[in-house]
Amino acid sequence: MTAVLPAIRDFEAAARDRLDPAHYDYFAGGAGDELTVRANEAAFARLALLPRVLRGAGSPRIGVTLLGSRAAMPVLVAPTAFHRLADPEGEKATARAAAAAETIMIVSMAATVAVEDVAAAAPGATLWFQLYVQPDMAFTEALVRRAEKAGCAALVVTVDSPARGRRDRDVRNGFDDLPAGMRCENLRCENLCDGGAGPVRPIVMSPVISWEHVDMLRRMTRLPIVLKGVTHPADARLALDHGVSALYVSNHGGRQLDTVPATVDLLPEIVAAVGGAVPVLMDGGIRRGTDVIKAMALGASAVAVGRPVIWGLAAGGECGVARVLGLLRDEVEHALTLCGLASTQDLEPGLVRRC
Ligand SMILES: Cc1cc2nc3c(=O)[nH]c(=O)nc-3n(C[C@H](O)[C@H](O)[C@H](O)COP(=O)(O)O)c2cc1C
Ligand SMILES: CC(C)CC(=O)C(=O)O
Image (cartoon, rainbow, N blue to C red; front, side, top):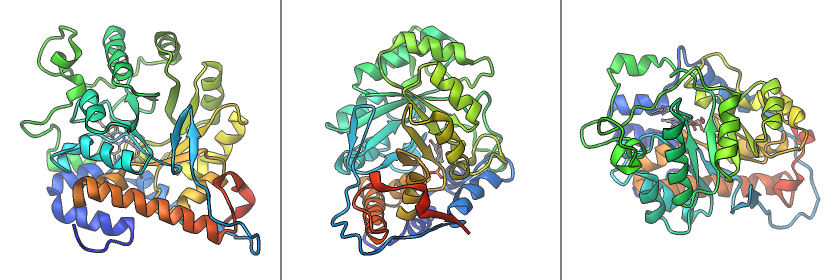
């Protein structure tokens, strides 16, 4: 990958050229008519930034500390499945790039490299583990213990998936399984040592999962629990009652329930409901440093990116992910400077106007 790719959308074009079309569609697509996929990005375009001048702010500071994990930039790697479809090194390449960028990678439960191998491939990486609570709680506990043992510093529990999203592109392409030789390695029974039948457990997305399961997890582990996929302010308040350590506003990049509003539009109400009690993270549609600034001005403690990382990985492996993360870091610093601010801590809602 030698071409100069000045924007995330250039990485997407490069990734599209390289990927099997069905795999590109899996990564890019979403549920139903993909209204929410498009809404996430469109909502950022409707927000304008109103900078201040002559503030003598100096060099911008953009590092954050989240639940005890330090990141040099407020952009995390969102959990995404199946990285080996994009590059043979898969999640190992992503983790090395995240470590080099000194940011946090949230490893998907549906990773194509086992979490222990991701950790071993990227010493010094700060990893969090994403979990879909499985109705079989003994199995869920086996996953939590593995994540703890691998050194993951937080548990990101995805709660927007009581059923799998209906994704027309995947149906049209007949994409319903990984190619031969690739598996969800965290679900391999020999890795789990749980004596489960068959070589790989399926990921169950179950409508029986409830707040009771969050309570069970809370008792099961000392890791901080981040609840991912909260969009309703009433759920944000309930989450606080159930002792979560952080909220993560997400509509799963538009891949679960279509027609859910854009996440950046939901953010202010959730931030108000939380009232500063815990950090609020968000993802969905972030493609520019200015998007990061807008989300943080509206109260996000940090943001995460899903597809941009996949585009980097498909376009250029570890180096491609490093360039995507570097591009976002540079854009955040640049936008902050142009806003007349010294630190992301100084971001506030008055900087953002709806247009
Ligand atoms: C290809 C793909 C796979 C994903 N896999 C997971 C997953 O395994 N677990 C999860 O909680 N979210 C998953 N997500 C959702 C992301 O964590 C994130 O919410 C979303 O990608 C953010 O939107 P963005 O892609 O516009 O940045 C996935 C998203 C994509 C695009
Ligand atoms: C394999 C799936 C569980 C990953 C996912 O959450 C997604 O594709 O959005």
